[in-house]
Length: 109
Image (cartoon, rainbow, N blue to C red; front, side):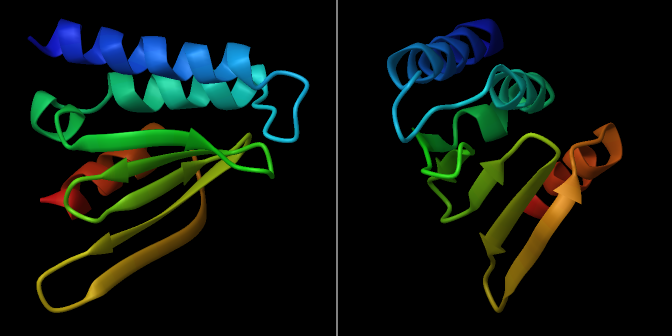
C-alpha cells in the first residue's frame, strides 16, 4: 500500500517537473529530488494525508495536507506550518536534513 501511494506522489512530482519546465513555475531538478527524498521518509499515514502538490513561481514545490498543514520545499530549505487544535506551528527556512524531516513528522502527530 505504501509503495502505491509513494509511486502516485512520485509520478505527480515528476509530472509537475516535466510539465512546468521552461515556464514561470519551473521546478529545478534539485527541488524535485528534495521532494522525492521528503516523501520517501513519510509514513503511510502522512502520505495518505497529501491533498495537493503544486509548483510556485519562485521555483519551489508545495504540499497541501488534508489536516491544513502546508509544506514548501526549495533547493536548500523547507518551510511549513501546521494548524493544530489550539495553535499554529510555523517553521521557516529550515535545512532539508533527515533530522528536520523527522521533526516535521513528529510535529504532524
